[in-house]
Amino acid sequence: MVDSVNVFPPGQRLTNSSTGAPLSGAVVRFYVAGTTTPKTVYADQDLTTALGTSVTTDSLGYPTSDGSTKTLVFTDTSSYKVRIETSAGALIAEHDYVKAAVEAGTDDGGSVISTRTVETKSLDYTVVAADQGKAFAGNCTGGDVTFTLPSAAAADVGNGWLCTISHAGTANQVIVATSSSQTITSGALGYSTAFALSNSGEEITLISDGGNWRVFGHVGPHIKRGQGVLTIADRLAAAPGSPPEAGLLYIATGAATWGSTSIANHDVVVHTTGGAYVKITPPTDCGWVAYVQDEDRYYSFQGSAWVIEEASETRPGTVEKATAAEVLTATDATRYVAPVDMLRHPGVAKAWGIVTYAAGVPTLAAGLNVASITDTATGRLTVTVISFSSANYVIVATAQAPTGNNRIAAVTSGQAAGSFEINVQTGGGTLNDPEGIHFACYGTLS
Image (cartoon, rainbow, N blue to C red):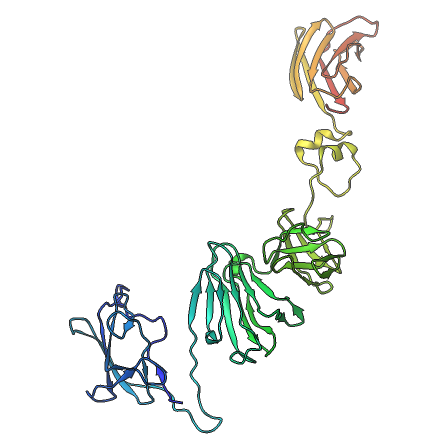
């Protein structure tokens, strides 16, 4: 085998260092190190297809064999000099005694130079044996992209063959599928015949063990995606009625069989493809945090169960808002009452008022939920308040009497769901205007 090295990494272009613009038509000339003797370079690593002693870049600054056909550039183990010129022959840069390929030794101390290429696929692609070592970027923005792996047992694949596949889209999923019913395994966790990459930036490297596929490395999406929190689609007692998106996660709320997989209560369940599921059992008291999208709520795994971080008298946490009916019942000890619902509690006054008199004319000095007051006659005041559910509510009223007069306040007949009358009379029963009236109402609102 010939020892050679690729001069330019695959995909590298020559650009203007000041503007970043591609150097179109630039000429790269090669010489024997320390001389002006031209040196031949090649288009293949076996050094059989000669390119001559120079290459010219295309309009994008990429090396070509004829001005338009992109090419790789290989050289042997001898050091060389490289001179880069503009299309007009002006010198851009020159480097001498550039180290070339490392000569392979005859013992275990030899060096190996490895290169990997990246290919982007936006449509389904069947990976072949010749793709050994490649890194595939699945652009699934326009729809799911499936990469079908070759047979792990094929003669030209076999034990040790590997490739990397990543999610490079803004939506949808990248599906990694096997052929010949071979399985994908990560540690002790089996993913059957498919593995889904659900978020942009997620990446997996798979290696053949000669019969099936193993996850050699897995990279989660970028930290900005909320690393450390499981995004759960829903909490369900059984599998969804129809297969959901590949890669969606669920929390099981009971023991059941999802597809062909036996699921226990509190398992995290991953949908792979076509109604197949994989379960992940959280370790005891692991503290995992999950956000359930269907509920807009966070859970954490404490002990052996998923629980809501509820607030208490000694720690902060999540508190659920009480409904109006729960406030009315007045027995719940865990939910909070919003200020707007406080009026629903049976022990809270629904309306109150302070009325003052001047020359026999009443004025509402302060109050809550009092719509109006009307001076019906001497010693009689009609009050309109918020609407109760019926006329069966409590009114507490007191009258402020001038010095020397004893007066009492009484509620007369005519009490309705939204109004009542207060009569103020002397000890002898004569109606008379007081200096002021205080009242409060308790009951159930409509």
